Image 1 (cartoon, rainbow, N blue to C red):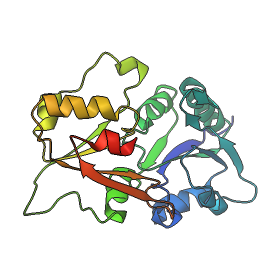
Image 2: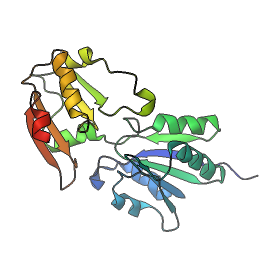
Image 3: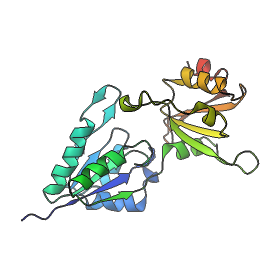
Image 4: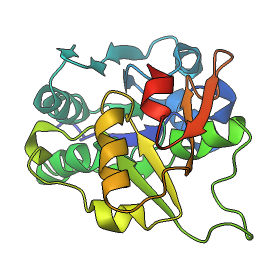
Length: 222
């Protein structure tokens, strides 16, 4: 009887290949199969063994190479064949990275798994832009939220009054819905002159930062 393999979910970090953790690199080096996302820096795949199989499972808006259900089945199938599978996910797998769904699929099918944290873009991109998320003189709370609700959560509106009262907000995938986010925060009491920074291509050489105020940031971004 073939011995069941296992899955290691690895956070690849936000883009700069040097931000991969040592534990994450060791997992990639040991893998028989690496299933990787669109936001993973391709340079990280050089850590894989020459005989390892590399499988792209990237998802962009309206363009999925594999659906989430197909990815879940792929991980289970490869592990069932006795492979050590590394699921390489951009940033940290637990911050808007769907690791919960994929780990649940493994657990349901009796596949052993581990999760290796990664550096999330919501922390790294501001720091590379010179913005610490906490400062003793200015704030004592940070909230992380997504600016893009998935279809299953489309009807679950965020608690904008609670969010408007938090001193620092880190919004992932927020540019597309920026006018709506701005309107919600303003209408729930956040000051119009609240400083806002938009960061794209965080931690990469192409990183760009746009700084403005909540009242006008959507027009600046456009």
